[in-house]
Amino acid sequence: MSGGGQQRVAVVTGGASGIGLGVARRLAADGHAVAVLDRDGTAAKDAATSIGAAGGRAIGVEVDVADRTAVEVSYDAVRAELGPIGIVVTCAGIESFDKVTDIAPEVWDRVLAVNLTGTFTCLQLAVPDMVDAGWGRMVTISSSSAQSGAKRMAHYVASKGGVISLTKAFALELAKYGITVNTIPPALVDTPMARQAEVAGDVPAVEQLAGAIPLRRAGTPDDIAGACSFLCSDDAAYVTGQVIGVNGGLYL
Image (tube, rainbow, N blue to C red):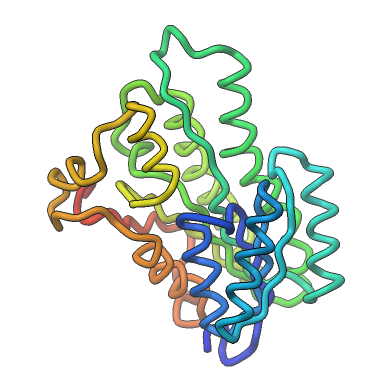
């Protein structure tokens, strides 16, 4: 079990599908109690039920991470049902495809509110629990597009670039409390969000895009979850402030 054999309480945002669901399942398999947070409350509860059926312990909580008050309420619910929060993995995110000249202010604001401010809120509100415990693990899910740039995604790229920088700032401030903070920037991952973009015509087919990846396939949620599992364990106690690329070699 991760965490030195001790069960921790892990919060996974965006945990009802895609990368978040893969991470939630993996952390539960590692022996942690998992709170699946998602703006789709029904899907969050379904995910928690499936984790429970597999032998894990989980709850599902509906929350929009852009709503700070809602996050505070959800964290209180997690503490009441599972206990103090020891692990946070921020997978909640949205994307949009617009030319730089066409990005509406409200679209810009929403992408930043969910991807960047939501990440900040979900990390910040867990700090007191981790400081009290003298142990904590934070992993943010950023994006390789923040490292390379991407056309028609200036708002998304800016938000994810902010997540990478935010991760480093948190790491430096919180290290003295035994809290590590790292980020995983995936490239192409076969998720419902990726497939929705494909169907909408915003990107080519996942299989076509996979041809540009050195490992010749799209990533899976389990690929990301494996790295996340390590970063949330005691084995990663000396790893903090790092950008751990899980991208099949697409970005080096």
